[in-house]
Length: 73
Image 1 (spheres, helix red, strand yellow):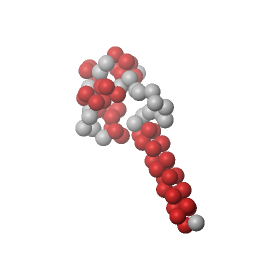
Image 2 (cartoon, helix red, strand yellow):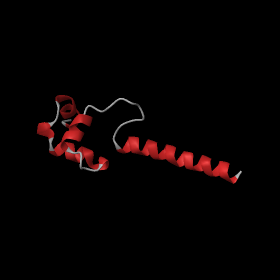
Image 3 (cartoon, helix red, strand yellow):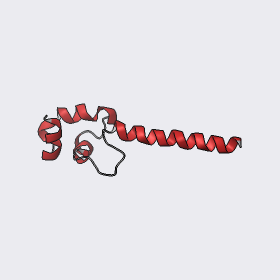
């Protein structure tokens, strides 16, 4: 009984962590990639995900048109 409860709790924590990571990336839990994913990988790969927006804004002149449209509002 204890093992079943432990497994359920661990599974719940992992599931919530995955949702949190999706939100931290600025995305949703869908599999569609952001138009800024290639730009993030090219320009900001060493930047923590939570700071991706500020890094991309610093490189606004180097962004792809789709990503630039997202950050030039």
